[in-house]
Length: 93
Image (cartoon, rainbow, N blue to C red; front, side, top):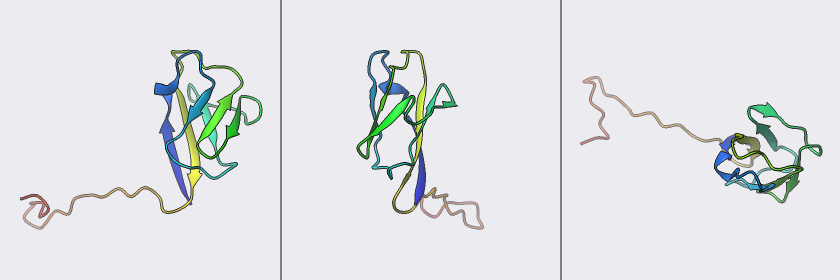
């Protein structure tokens, strides 16, 4: 399993209560943060399928909304460039 954190603020418009992630998350692992404060499952939000959730009230258009969840498979891999002893990155010509 791997943890993903995504900013969904671009989906907030002050009216919508349905939001979607770009990944299929494992059921029961979704955490929702409104303005940085973790919200309660089954009080503020309900999972809807494996990529979505519904809030009980729409976030205001100036609110921030982010999520964290688990996905099956490996985590996101950060690849750092290899620097040779000369200080030159051999991947760059």
